[in-house]
Length: 324
Image (cartoon, rainbow, N blue to C red):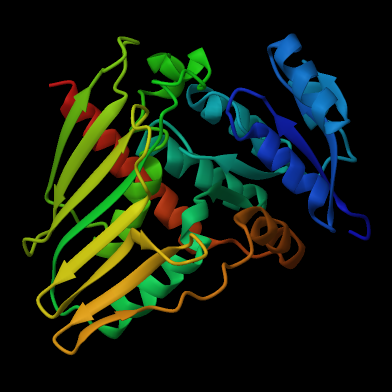
């Protein structure tokens, strides 16, 4: 393959659709060629902003021999159909989370991608950020001792300021509200901290703005050895810094509770020897770039797929528990 990778955006449904389209425009080895959407007006609007053609014919787009891959930002409820069609057409797939509504469907998509020898990658962007890389180093070094508690919070004011599109409150399309969407980020970070083996998932969901889905959520998880994890998210918080705290028998890590003179969030490590600021490494390349590299090298980002599956396990468990 001597030409740049030719990419199409599949749907403008998600708020990150334009971001991934621009990633294809900005990357030196990718070229954006089209936008598909089953909503013609919505698709034309995104295509105009990105300067490419729009289409409502998904099958015809996927049949193009000059198309190498797609970014999927369709409604979460449509992921299985849209991603499945792309894989069936031999196109590489970079998709917004969640990969699929259920774990069984995740497994089927991953298996189909392996069988078709296409690269499938799920957008879990905060795993590439410097604070996460620093946190992983601390955890791997065992500096905190046996972990006892973690809390990750990510929230914004999309509902109270009314800047989220109405479709984000359609439970049938979005598979829920704040927890299935924004909450996915603190979920996969919590799993990075505490692992995937959780013995209990206890959700508290509330609907503050009367849209019919949770816009304020907290989920508590427990590990087999008794560590507690708290995952917090919501669309009704005007000023809530993204924050991480992890505590163990020998120390604690805090991130996002203070800023430096440049306004950058600070990470601190506290142990018996005192408290010190942690230098954060540079971010890794964004996952879109890693996906493009994986296409060229013919390798699968295995850790990404494993974490995407685990994410679905916990989100599905929380949503199911909240309904009972």
